[in-house]
Image (tube, rainbow, N blue to C red; front, side):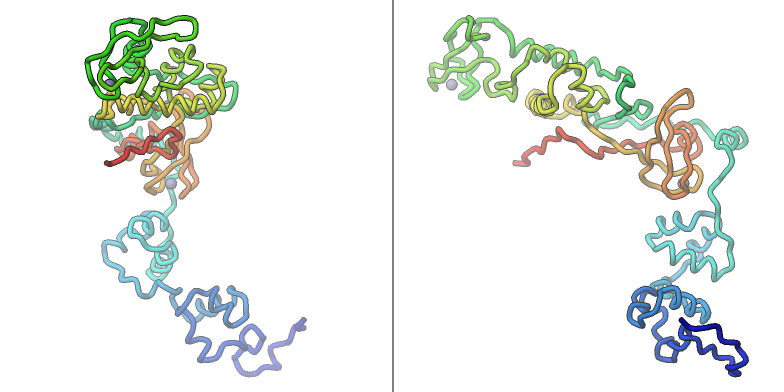
Length: 355
Ligand SMILES: [Zn+2]
Ligand SMILES: [Zn+2]
């Protein structure tokens, strides 16, 4: 490759190494008009060469010159992380860091102090209570994990009211009472007992004198064809629990497909029994959520990941912007916000036909 050439052979102050030889008035005019990488590709040089020359000439990177900085935007520079400012104003991190360097402001660093000692010093007011959510909104328990390593146990998060509601409803549809019910097809009351339960017919069958159809109490409910219903009482106690389907399979000794099918059918049935969705919203089985809260160290909004164990200090979150971890409790105290758990994945979601 090119051997080292002493400078004295080139008396002009223009560096004629191959790296510099590409720079002419025409090529320099390109700088900042497109990304360094795309200019580098066009000139067939490394993007580092382009970036370096652009810096030497004090040309702003592509897209940053056009951005109009307001005093309000600039007031955050160096006080808040560049990434957070970028997020707040919907600009790129590059645009922020470029402006910050132009104004000769040192970058902000996330708080590195122990959050508990910041809390002890600043004495923030207690976290405001969670506003009463609509009863049809699904709520998750932030202190309880939704996923654990195999073998670890899950805390009991059963909603006893949902269990009781379903127990009553199940007792009704699985009832052996011989008194005829209204026809599920035509709603006629002209119905009669068609057959008492016997060896091959576990439930009484009825007959409609108006539409000439046979039915039982499960007809026209999503439960009509469910099998293994002997574990149904145990299953309904799991519906409100914040556990994955796999855990329900393990506890009931049935396969994943069955659990997924039951969960979907029962949720559909809950919506039939109560179209307001109040009871259906109590189902948590198999639903994955993600946490949202402002980072107490760097201020970044948005999604935070749960981190491993939850012990005496409560569950911990990690911020992907500043890469630090903190407990849910400390974050809520410092930001005066509540962690929001939003549904990330719901395998039993029912898309209700708007019609
Ligand atoms: Zn009928
Ligand atoms: Zn952060």
